[in-house]
Amino acid sequence: MKLREIREELKDSRSGDAAKLGEELADLKKEQFNLRFQQATGQLEKSSRMKDVRRAIARAKTVLREKQPSKTKV
Image 1 (cartoon, one colour):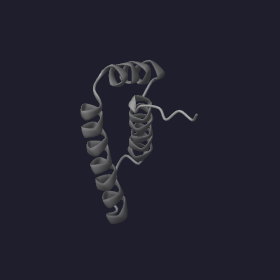
Image 2: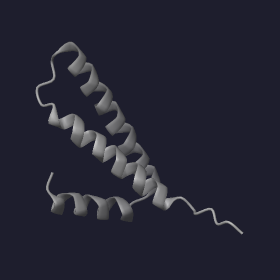
Image 3: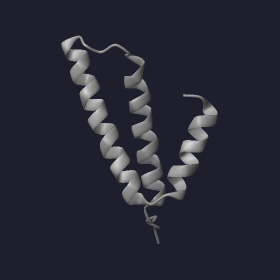
């Protein structure tokens, strides 16, 4: 994925709602599970997809964390 595509994706996720982002995160986790299963059985053709999915999960979690109300210490 190119940097320009990543920035556009982040811009879209930050402007969207948390529920939609949560669904996307669930889909990514399912895909990650399927990729791990394919790798274990020797059917995985594109191993670089695992890295892309792992990073997409991290991005989604980061945006979700940004959307949570911050806990301020007094």
